[in-house]
Image (cartoon, rainbow, N blue to C red; front, side, top):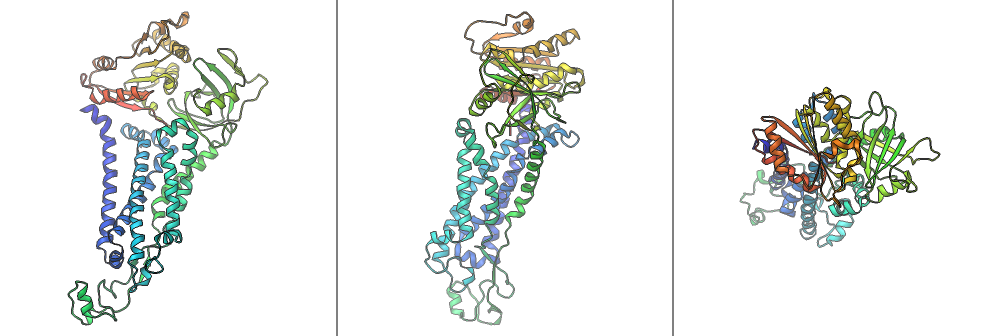
Length: 555
């Protein structure tokens, strides 16, 4: 129970507050339009469709403002790095920013359907219930006007159609199958959000819905000059014809001033300022120092950029105009700049069109199994821009006494920089013990960071702390029973296991060795491993040990 509370309580509390805010806003707006005197005549004309359309609009305004905040990467990175402002629990909540973004996006889609459906009913009622008594209240030009004409000849109607089309494109392209099979479609359609927000702020300009401004001089339901008390009784109003029941003047109506900009302008300006800052920061191309081809279709890039600083566990976003001017892809730093070395690096696996074309520009022709292309060779590398660095859950590895890092295949990259930092000075961190589990399908994958793992193992042995670094390597689908035959990789060979990890036994072992402690569990790999670890973290009951789950996810 304690582990579940540590992992889920904060997330569920935020979601409950968010749901409560949406529910309160919907109900409050619904009651305002159904019982408010200023909307009496409009409600009589449109009915409950008025209340539902305005209530859903309020929820849409809230979520259209909130959906941008999780995408402010620089702001999130700043909050994560400011330990005085941000506690560990708060930083772990920041890791759920993508989930919150998706939740807001789903709410926008759902309430857009509600909003559009209610307004379709409203348009029909504007046509059918055309008011002769209050011409200013009408949106239709005459009774029985075609609702399609009303939609296509008014600003709210035309902008509404455009908003629905843009939202539909963004929703469809956000599906998992589209993002995996063709990321470019997702990227380009998602950037239509700029057009979406511009149209959204114009949407209310037409003033389709009007409220009464002179309730004091014209109480709703009062007798007009051309109306008798008998007529009034026909409307189920029991009033006598006297001076008090007579209207002192005709009802005056005016449209609401647009409210949407009040909701979205703040987050939108914050996001735009951040994008401008990121554009300026990333405007200078990096210098590619070295390109290394590793086994199993992995490329290592070592780069140099003036005044670039980063912390272990952070990631950068790459843009290569030679491949695509608008596509940006995140990659974890596997090497950070230090006081002694200004270069930094990433490892990328060649999967998908973008990485294939990018690799062709870096390495035009296939060469040997392991190839190093230093800058002194007479060839030009493609122009490359980086944006970042940005924060990630892996930064928290050092903020626990005990941490468990689990990597699946190329998912080892967030932890490579962590291991390099420990190799430089493991005594400078709070971390007292690190369990490192790496699962790969092919033996050759371990060569990506074999030298780093051996160097860290050797250093800790020399400094009499062999228990600091607990290393386990698993090869899940071996083609043949082979091992690392090189002598320098002896420490890895002895820790190489054929098969899959037995996660429950591993958690029990860690729990018994670290009683009454909080263990940070960090995962970057396939969803199957992530789900298993998440479930075990929530259900662990080992000797009072609390396992706090952290999953690597790029925003």
